[in-house]
Image 1 (cartoon, rainbow, N blue to C red):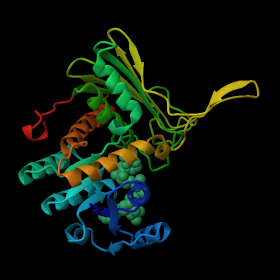
Image 2: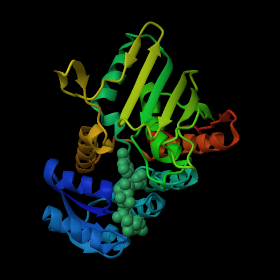
Image 3: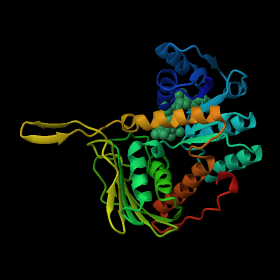
Image 4: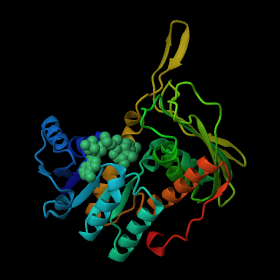
Length: 336
Ligand code: NAP
């Protein structure tokens, strides 16, 4: 069986997902597109040779009988409206992060999904699908390094544009760690603090870069995450877990080692799309398979909400310099 997908938002990640649904993944085809800028859809149709209908209104796409499932890859502030509309239409929806721009917005989606009585939402948190993170989780779960005590993490980008603001270090960048570390440790966050090291001269005048986020989990694990978005040298994701009896590191991405000009070297990626390209493929194939089998198992609306609650606290901590408590309500039975 082939799943007919409608895509809202044909910008950078939207195009990537349309390409993978059309050329890489199985049992899916993109039959409908919408973007606030129709020319973006026309360009994608031409570039990929798609046979997809272009809708001028996202709600018409959602409600079209031709569309069985929806990908929301538009600008973040539009996500809540489109996900709620998909739930109302009874259709499965894959929503890129953030699920909504506020925790309350995510909660509105959680409540709508529970009221619908069926899991319909998968959030585009792809790191739990990354083979490196999966290997790290398998190692932790095996007990080989004992209980995790501390995590040292880094999220570094070569550079960001002028429109990138200090709070985006949390809402756009750290949000991936907030999701994947919760999944890795099977734990929730209890508090957050943000401290600012000496600022790099490479950052724009309005941006505080780098930043260090200090998190504490309910089980007492201490996590430090360095966010450094103008590090110049590459797109570099690090995660080290210190346990009671050993230390485990997230594997480095595969890279050819060369001996040349009196140097032993391996490359470092610079493009985020390449770092997690396999994980994006696996997460979307999982969505397609789960919609077809009627059993949604990927990152849920509750995971989107949990990340948003922690992100809100981190943004407060950015501004007040204090240790900010994070209070997560009990997970509803619907999401167990
Ligand atoms: P982008 O290149 O700006 O694309 C967003 C697209 O949505 C643009 O074509 C934009 O049109 C369109 N759009 C805006 N408002 C709309 C509306 N009301 N209805 C329909 N379309 C609308 O951004 P992006 O980098 O693809 O990011 C999109 C989302 O994916 C963001 O939430 C981002 O955080 C997320 N993302 C996730 C990852 C990941 O690793 N999981 C990576 C990248 C992005 P205009 O350009 O004309 O405004």
